[in-house]
Amino acid sequence: MEIAIRNELIDTYYSAVDDADFDRMLTAFTEDVEYLYPGEEPMHGHGAVRTFFEERRQTKNTTHDVFRRVHDDTATVCEGTITGQMGEDSLDGAYVGVFEFDDDAGRISYVGVYTRL
Image 1: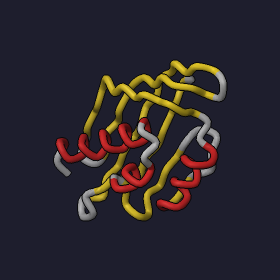
Image 2: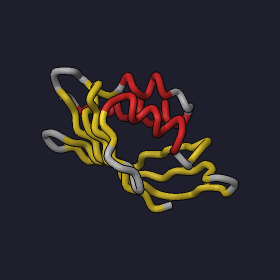
Image 3: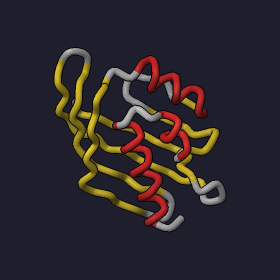
Image 4: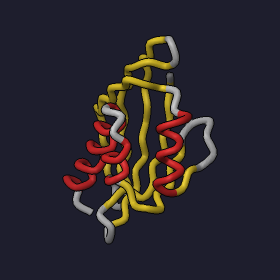
């Protein structure tokens, strides 16, 4: 998949998360997406990912800022900062997101999130 398309999908994901627009977020993912997040069991598919974001995600009102992207033949790794709220507290942390893609579907098929909050 072209790097420009990968970047578009990743940008859609992060902006949709920050806007709490989970319908738009899911448009970047394959139906059977695998999603890994710290402290959570691996999630598979739109339903599991939506449930996590709507019911269990502890961070709110986030802003993701990607400052580095590294691409290889099959994956893209993004490094960035995140601000927002975690419960009643303000959030100022860092993350790495690992993305894999389904070329045929033109979507993200795997997301691994690693944080320092």
